[in-house]
Image (tube, rainbow, N blue to C red; front, side, top):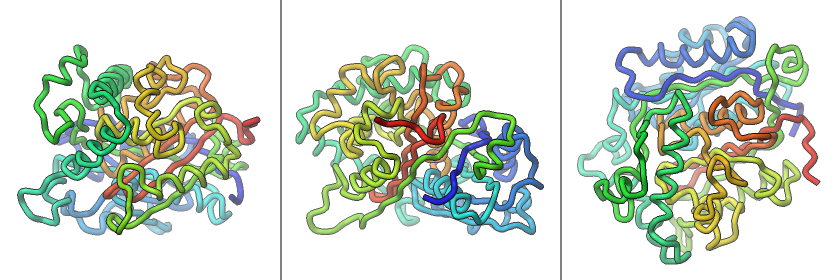
Length: 384
């Protein structure tokens, strides 16, 4: 790690079907809100980093060219990041790296998706009809996890209820189901066994943005910074002999690298809360184990104990998570900025009491791309 980097501005749109605003308007909305939070204008930004999921999802190729004007990037460096569903978090990390390297003082990071103007399932199926969708890919691995761990079937329902209840506290969240219950989840249509309709993420439009700054620039800002104390990315092939898609080695390696950089030796105790990328309910216990927050076979027990609820010992997805809002390209950045909001103490009704250290996480592709960061209220957190 080079120079210190901090999140000094945060912006995001509401996440829902946004037919009333153009794609350019969507990204500019989030960018302007982040700049206002940072007390800056486009003129103060040295470079822009843009992330989104595959271009085919909307059929707009090389959007970084057409969006440069909307993002105040004309005449400035603009960088494009693409790592499938993990791209939002990977984009945040790319922006942080540009600050840490000493190349720039202030970087605007933006990620977005407008699913209402495309067909994600068609695109993810290589332009063919009849694709199995993301749930069709992940469901067999979830069934393997259940067989391997012995987890009871209500765990998935419990995660769905928790995240949807958290979403009721987040004004930006897409899905709002006041009467959500385990019975309601269980009785919703089965999509890909064991995943019911209400255990699956929605299709959302939305954009998210953060302004990242060097330590000198951060200390001049009007708002409390969230310090980026560590980040890591890892990837592996989608298929090779011996691959374990339930607990991908790249995810384990990413978590190990992240905690090592931060100086974290007991993540469940030393991290106050986490925003994990959980597009299907069962991925909460799977990532608790796959990212070394729980031992193999113990993740579902942590969920079942209530520890991952908003008032629990290790809240997961206090914002409502991907299960409640999924603008695919932005979803990873939303996890990172929600972690930053927690340590800045600005998360509103879904604030975790006393949160000082938070984890933002995303994964993508066939559970093969991973990007994670740790943010802290203190530039030098003491993990002893």
